[in-house]
Length: 110
Image 1 (cartoon, rainbow, N blue to C red):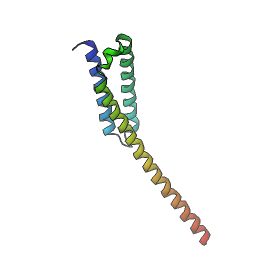
Image 2: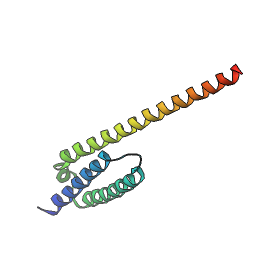
Image 3: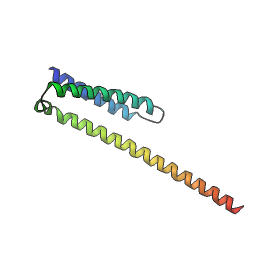
Image 4: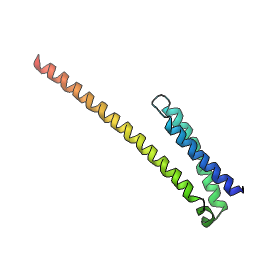
């Protein structure tokens, strides 16, 4: 496999590793997982810049479809995580408002 193919493969493996990290993310490991994801993202961006400097757009576009599919999957996964956390946050907020309302009612009834 040539240099370009190896670097594209390295990017693809990093994207797959990020996807695997996202599959196992939870409240306990969120900070550590996001730090690892940020490191992998920085590595991917460095490789991307290196490839842009070394190869023309036409050559790189041959490898684009596979990478685009992976990046879209990652984007969807991040969106799902954000939606889930937002839903949980909203539910907790509603529960807190209900508790505050109950406290107010208890104070009024005295």
